Image (cartoon, rainbow, N blue to C red; front, side):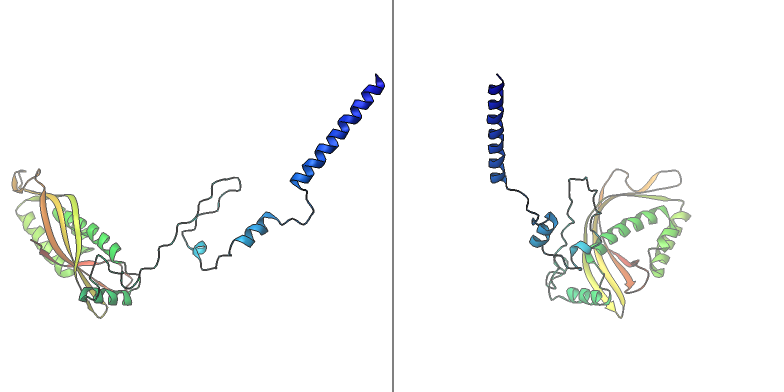
Length: 244
């Protein structure tokens, strides 16, 4: 019994040695000359230039070591060519496009799309503030000449003991119509097409003009002015006219 036990032990030991030898031959073994993972990554990835997208302000914050999700920073938009700069705003080679080029020459940070969005906000604010008779807000958004005209209209309404209400439903379009540049003084003219509800009431609350239930289509042409390169970024309303 003892001899049989010893013989079985020897047989199993030989089998174990054979299996280990086969595994080492298939999987390989460390030799001490393997390249670390980070070196492999460096060899297969071009080192970014110091001015590349990795150094932009929209680079995402580093993630924790145990975070398995890696968020790449957004791709920077391709530079807009001179030809397409005013696409959808002004025709190439037109006087309007030429004036806008001069505006950018004096103030490189000028963004026409951002300007048009800001003009829509100003349009709604001014119309609503005028209806409310909010002179303090209007002073910050109008040139002196335009403010005097608005102030006179507000005084006439107050004298008649009337109140006005304006509710914007939508601004459907804001279109750049013209641009003028005199020295560093720029004027941009926009046509607004909007839907709003307007009503004027007397002292007793009776409706004397408009309707609280009727949506009216309106069209206005407004001109905004600003001295380019100045510290004050505000474009002031310099002229108004009906676009009807």
